[in-house]
Length: 158
Image (tube, rainbow, N blue to C red; front, side, top):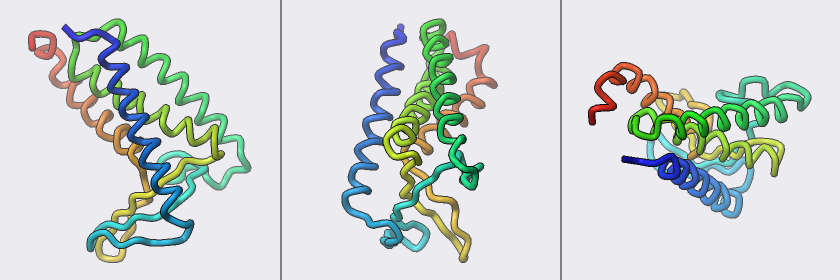
């Protein structure tokens, strides 16, 4: 049976991978550079002072601390949920991914005042907002959390 420590470790791995990827980007891509990877994918360096899709990025700075406090509070709640239900594998995996991603972005907000984004997808002239490993973990965690809500009755039997 998994213990909460296993899920905390997964969150920690997400944080480490996120921070390593951002370190590489900050040391190899200048702001404004676009590095072609594939017809639908570029590497870029973008600074996001807001939340997802640059929500509230145009605000004068209060959003930095608001999103930092919000992410830490949610992560504390997740840590408690992981202690209470470590045996619920899918839900715990989802929560650990969300927690790791949220804390990865908190580190950026504290260090830089903004989140480092660098993955840019595009198609037919439309560009998706740049994102990072932490954002990907949060998105995957949210999808798994929704899926786990539909399978919760069977999950504890697995």
